[in-house]
Image (cartoon, rainbow over all chains, first blue to last red):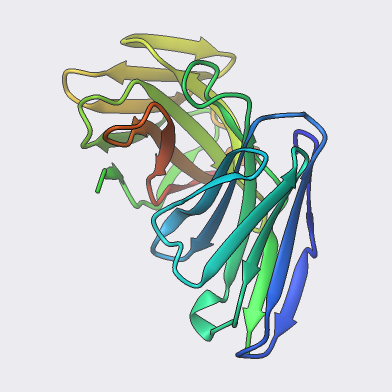
Length: 115
Length: 115
């Protein structure tokens, strides 16, 4: 998984509770991404980061926030979890976005269930 | 919204046959194209990237790109049961006014290779 870990790997939480997912990389890549994957929707971008403290929204950012205080760590927070946020969450990294190589590599994923 | 369309499948081929996976995209300005393989319960794994029109071969895999037709395909020769997975097409497009790009994913094509 290209030096990417995610924690926790599985989590069950109740509606209304805050949840933080962590992505850690050892590749020193500048760009980091959070996706969610749901049946019938494929992979959808939540937020991404293009440097320490530099983040931007993706297509499904409502209800999520992110932080990146170090190159190696990218945190995804669900401020108040809802059942619609039950999903598999993937972190990805890439060396570059503005010029080749553009390849993104994915972490192992976190399966989140909101009851 | 930039669209990436794939045949939903499932696609079923016998062992040793050629599997052909297709993908079309809506953004004519897209420059980079990727194929990911995803086994059930696992994360997407990059298997091919292609940037120029024509064919790119890597072992049993061949990616084909036709930018004029906005079409990219993946051929798997001598298909093996271990190739059974979902194949995701991803296209890199830039947001208007930004030098950064992001990946847009198709919903994937499920391939089954039977012995």
